[in-house]
Image (cartoon, rainbow, N blue to C red; front, side):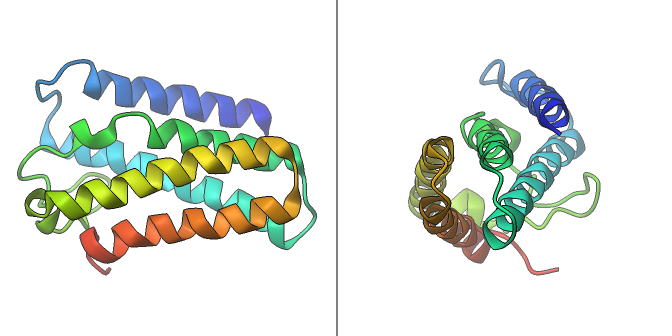
Amino acid sequence: MKKIAQILTAGLALTVLAGTASAQVIGKTEDQIRWRQSAYHTMAWSMGRIKANVEGSYNKDQVAEAANVIQAIANSKMGYLYQAGSDNGKGWKETRLKSEFFTDRETLGKVAGAFGLAANDMAKVAAGGDAAAVKAQFGKLGDACKGCHDKFRKDE
C-alpha cells in the first residue's frame, strides 16, 4: 500500500509540475481539467483512507501516508491548472468549477489558504500518531475542503 501511495504521489507531482513549470499556460483546457480532476480524486481517496482509520482500526502509517499525499497535492501549485475559461469543458467528466472561481479572488485566497494550512497541519498531526489528534485535525481538513466546495463547485 505504501508503494502505491508513493507511485501515485510521484506521478501526480510530475503531472502537476509539468503544468506549473512556468507561468505560461501549458496544455489544452481539457488536459488541465483532467489533471486537476485526477488530483481531487486522489485527495478524496486519501481522505477516505484517513476516515477509515479514525472510524475503524487505526494504523498510523496508513494515516501518515494518506496525509502526506494530501499535503503534496495541496502544495503543488495546482492554481496553474485553472486557466480562464476552464469553468466550462470536460476532462474525465464535465468540470464542476463555478465561474465565481475567477471573479471572487478574495474568497478564493481565503479558502485556498485555509486548505493549505489544514493539509500541512494534517500531515504534522498524522506523523505524531495520536489517533484522537488525527480525528480532530481530520475534521478541520474536511471543513477546509467544504469551504471551497460550497463556494466554487457546482452540484452534480
